[in-house]
Length: 226
Image (cartoon, rainbow, N blue to C red; front, side, top):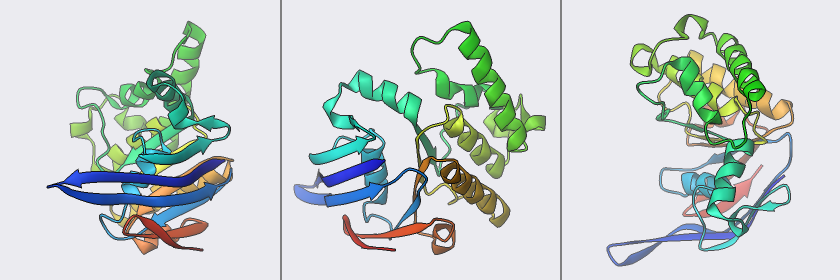
């Protein structure tokens, strides 16, 4: 379960205080696929970054299962993210000089105490994901040789490598055509069906329709939920 309790985050810009999150409270259970919707600048990305241990809030609690993410050290939080949280972004964030296989395996680099057998298992899982996402003939291609859809599928495979409990997707379909958008959304739904938690930030209501629950955000606050 993911739990955010009265989470607040502010920024200062030109001597003005900007409220990115206003006492946000949200609970997402195992097996849930939740879309966070709202216009640009409403706080969707900040909410995802806080939920994923990437952005410490000014106040409030962020818990995944029994772990309070901001009550553990930065090193412990990084290790927790590597094991239990996957991220998918609109801009992909692939390493430009690594091929598809090595980009996917990059998700395991932060894991501590990996032995040879674990490395073999991770490589086998990466190859399974590559086949699953229709990338087998792009195995050794670097990102510049991939289409936009292939880059996003590679990024999604990387996010799924460690079989995360929580999958966070920030506008993951913003650069995709209809076919690849549907493929990504279906894979997000499948991750939830398999017992994971999926939190998707999007301004596209068509993409949000793949989720089981939709939460509307406005000016840093949750306004409605269905």
